[in-house]
Length: 94
Image (cartoon, rainbow, N blue to C red; front, side, top):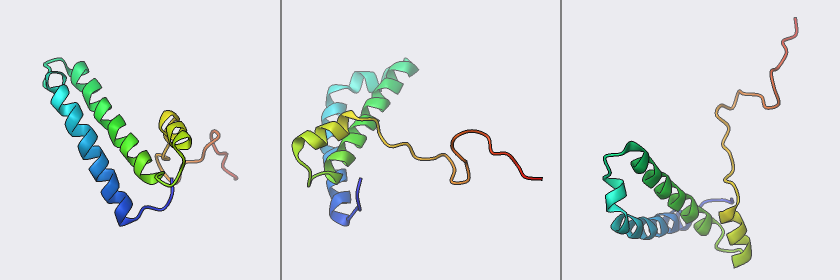
């Protein structure tokens, strides 16, 4: 998504704070639900808001259409471990 500067980090925090506070204000019942599945969905919504905040802050130089495409696209996957090899099992030489 690009190099992150202090300003970008500030923008991420500001955007997330604004979006999340609006969500929390309107979703207090689901966030405090007795049903773990309902609470999990609420946490997922907050995670999506964090992702959108990052995309918006990191792509402020792009036209709106490109930002929209990035928000709607799948997030980049971070490898679980740097030592894992993608594409199947690696054979050992003897």
